[in-house]
Length: 225
Image (cartoon, rainbow, N blue to C red; front, top):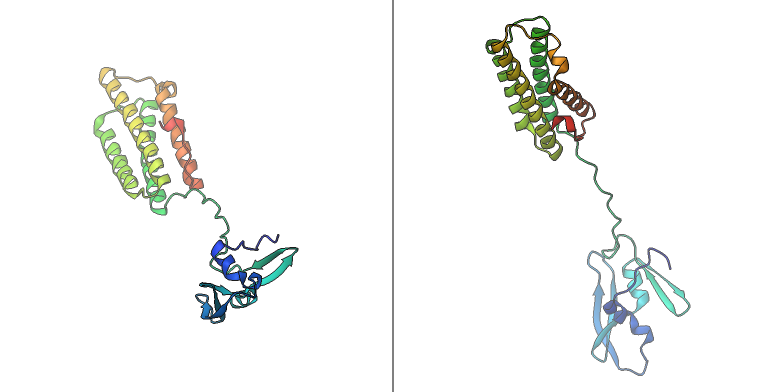
């Protein structure tokens, strides 16, 4: 059977049964059948208290077609008919980052990177790692972070914002760690950051967040946990 052919429900089958009803039964004109949205009409007749319509008339007013296969009568309705089966909708793709969040995330990452670079240079050159210059960098990074969190409106935005907050928290932890070390010792070994696992975690997370920003798609990253 043609895939676009529609099986007729029981009530419609009764309407179409006029051609199969015995001619000896009493019939009378019962009005007209109109399909909503269609200008044409088909005559209805009543037989033993029930209404029927001629199948050819039904095909005409619905702009359908009729064909016969052995003992079967197949009525094919146009796809525009209300009973047509809708095509399946393919699943939607994951949503990209919103433009507002993407811009704010990039600014926050840049500020965290600046904070990290200042800390790295101080340790490499044996400068004092003191709170009087570290705190302004932290406050600036925190302000950019809050702007990114506020701009996170979509699901991917909010997931990425959580990773960004973790990156800030790890950076603050490492920064506080080296400020405390400077209080206890005048000198900090220049390779201290290279040996610090938290520093490597911060670098890996920053790289992952930057890659997400480039592709505009969220991907979970264990180094940002």
